Length: 88
Image (cartoon, rainbow, N blue to C red):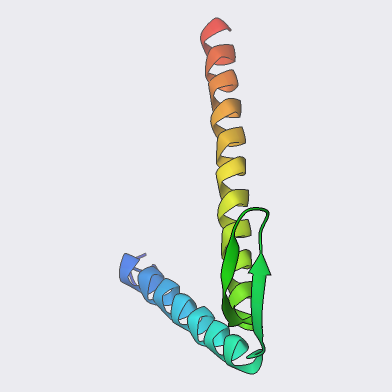
């Protein structure tokens, strides 16, 4: 039924609004946590950035690494499933 189905444009609008909302929330979070921090890694000293910015950077890095590792597992499982279905 075309009157109740949603077009692809509605999905993209929602995703766009979600991204904008998260960006605004992140900006407010970074402004509220404005204490300067200098993060020291093992061999590298990071720049002086606010605590909020550092937390957002680490959240983004952790999210990316989590997606990367889960993608590697998904690829492995798909290969195993493909081999099992070819054999059977």
